[in-house]
Image (cartoon, rainbow, N blue to C red):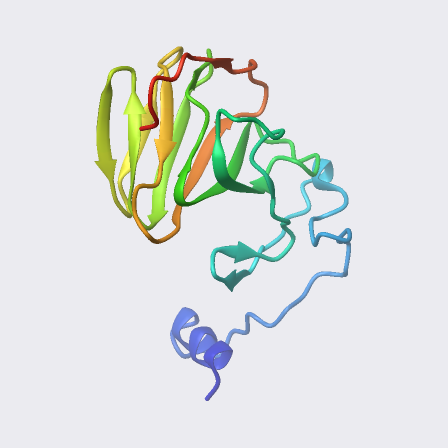
Length: 173
């Protein structure tokens, strides 16, 4: 019995309900629903190695000396979805770090892989998988990877948000 059949049997309590139904293909080149405003739903399959169908890896920000070795994948929020928030996956390579910055909007961060550190104001804390970070409005913050493995996390922010204000950097996190 294949994995889908096992799941179908488990979900249906053995009654044979199938999860094999597929909606008509209404996806764009990235696999996102073309008409999200009309509440078309989509499942973005995890491909392994912290990559998802329908997403592309993009640079964290414009090239700058205030950050290093950070990649970003937007999971929700760049295809016209009617959500009031954006969900992004960030990955910081060994030795990398985000910009030390502050802004009005809050962050919710869930660490998924590796270990890293978060600088919040003048305090720096180690973070590990499944740790949750709340970054309050206008709190200077920076994430960094001091390990030898990738450090990846989900970051949820308001869809409409202010621009970050870079802070002076003495040293990385």
